[in-house]
Amino acid sequence: MDVMHEWMKRISVKYPIVQAPMAGGITTPQLVAAVSNEGALGMIGAGYLNADQTRQIIREVKSLTTNPFGINLFVPEQCVATDEEIRMADKHLRIYREELKIHDLGKFTKPKQAYEEQIRIILEEEVPVCSFTFGLPTESIVKKLKEKDILLIGTATTVKEAQAIEAVGLDIVVAQGSEAGGHRGSFLESPEKSGIGLMSLIPQINDHVTIPVIAAGGIMDKRGLKAATCLGAQGVQMGTAFLTCKESGAHPQHKKAIIQTTEDETVLTSVFSGKYARGVYNHFIQEMSKKKDALLCYPYQNELTKDIRRAAGEQNNPEFMSLWSGQSPRLSKEETVAELIQRMVND
Ligand SMILES: Cc1cc2nc3c(=O)[nH]c(=O)nc-3n(C[C@H](O)[C@H](O)[C@H](O)COP(=O)(O)O)c2cc1C
Image: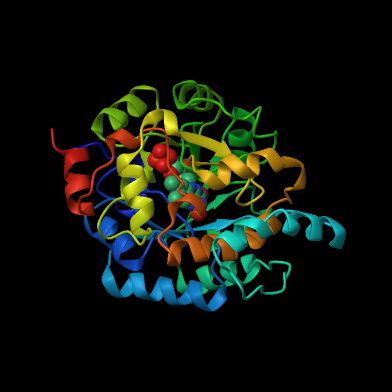
């Protein structure tokens, strides 16, 4: 593969392949560094990390690769819930806590995001690439990051979001199609109105912005890379394909679920976190979908279901885990990062 776009030259990556940032322990330093060492762009999913954890993982990646890598942040959003709403939402979860024998009911604390501190750490550590999802960084943050020559990436699910990303000064837009695994990055319209398939999204975004477009959603092999390129993308961002790699920190049950799942078994759901995300259908989604009125907004719902997801993980019970996956699970493989990237780039 001999394509070399300007953005690739700027940070010196060999292949137009970005390993999607996946918050929640999946993007281990070993995964990120292996991707960067193979000539693609490894990305840390730092959305759930505190300041210390953020600095530590950046340093661990630096100790494993001298190639460029990136980090991804969740732009904080407003979520307001009264104590009564929190109590009600919590009540609906009790039955699952009993099922999982969770006895130590920790007190609900409103989650705090370390976003501002993470920005400071990224500047201090001079991470070569920083991407955002769930919204836009402020102009002053963009200015500070640009002063350090950090390549900036935003996530868009519509043309309007892509235009807003360009207007605030980011360098690249990830076009996230409705096929994508994990949380929707939508920030201007409701997820219902922003579920655009990737084949529609790439050329429409491409026609309305001047910055490079990187395609995300359902891409698992070189057919997807070629198709995205034909539609005008200058690269691909793949999550599910990297999640099942040996170096990923995904729970073995999560990997197994993706390997065994078919294209008709993933759904968009907000029951785990309060924000729409695509994952493998399971018992928790089935049951909680009947109680949609009792869900809190993100990140409160996420905080509330944390002990359930943790206990499910400890008990190897995939029925209560958030098994995020894109719509192409039949194309997933258990392999190493090197094997996946070689499959992508060898003709
Ligand atoms: C398990 C999982 C976690 C994800 N976490 C993040 C994240 O922290 N930040 C982000 O920008 N995107 C996240 N995404 C979305 C990816 O960036 C990307 O849009 C998606 O993986 C593309 O679809 P695919 O999984 O079919 O490749 C996540 C995706 C998955 C599967």
